[in-house]
Image 1: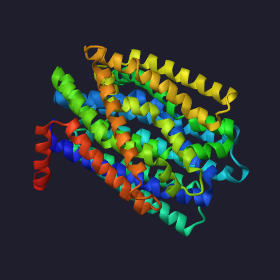
Image 2: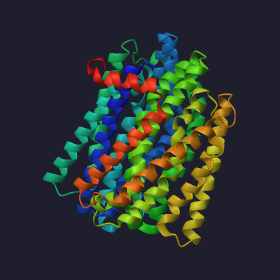
Image 3: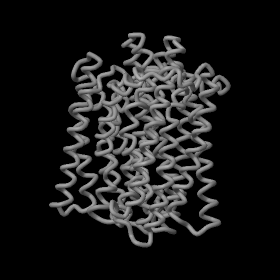
Image 4: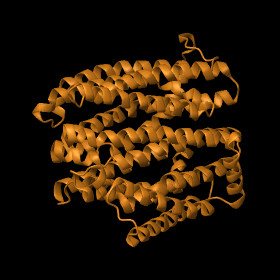
Length: 508
């Protein structure tokens, strides 16, 4: 793996994620203060509807990168154009269907959702703009494949950073000059979608000038091939949506706008974690695809192992700090809300991730080896189990809003400790214990980090009473955890090479 390209991609993507999380961090308390948590809850809910629509588009776009990357690896430019144009025009056709469905939903939105009377028109406008951005994003999805195929995630990261800067400026201006409205967030989302379309189009023309938009390259055969294999990814996406994106809709139904709004506030940390994952994990996929295309299983497994270590360092380490200091975080961030309840809900939500996060990239094994059918069927089984469990807990238990993340935690942990590691090992023709051992090692490491962090907090050398003392505590214990983690996760030779690169900045 090109270590220089890896470092550039990882650092640029990290700052891209940081900019997105930062916007949410500063805007959420402001919006809750000015609009209330009931109004705020409809914004993440509207984004969940985008995820619902993604179930359909996943069939094409999840596999587009695979086929285009492999065609580029073979240097077959005609085949690249065939796949590119077939997917592009397929996405445009899907977008036309979304326009009709979105119009119907927005017209009858009050019959679908529990919306306080004073918020009805604002929420309707919010969904109008969110669905407009959905149509733009779906139509242009294939334009981000060029950077993926050429392993130029840094270019995508720059675009995301600019997009987040535009988003922040637009929100500040709208909320400063006009009376705050929840649909302003939809307006800003639509504006950034238009920018992303323009920026990704230009990037495609720069990185792959040989790719042209031409209907003569459209092929029903290519479209059917990609969609046929991608169909199983759509089923996996459906299961993921049921497991992770139906919670706000269920909360709206059982606990009203207020319960949904409260649950939505717990989404910040889980969403930040998944944004980080979305940045770190794809960096390794091009190398894994190339290794598989070259039938180099040694390189593939080596890249997988490196990805596990990177995820532990970038994601699980800060998460250990949150598990201990989360209550303090919510007290400072949302002082008018129940900090302990928000912390507990967030921890329950993250429990499945603690298990599968140690080997997150293992899910790409199913895509790379093109063995999605069994994984899809299992995903549906787990999602149905989760859905039935959450409904039963909401109806017959006294858990209240806690029933929703608890049901997801039970089904998620069960899945990640049974099927996922076993089937991934089967796909790679490894022993059944191959990924179990890595999960156990990751869980032990995570437990050690939590124990060290807890001991530091109990020592109470620096009492947390403000953002300054909170950040100071997190910085100190974060540095300690980093010192502990680095020599455990990486061998001495790799660390020495990394140190040399840091000191020779010009080479990175």
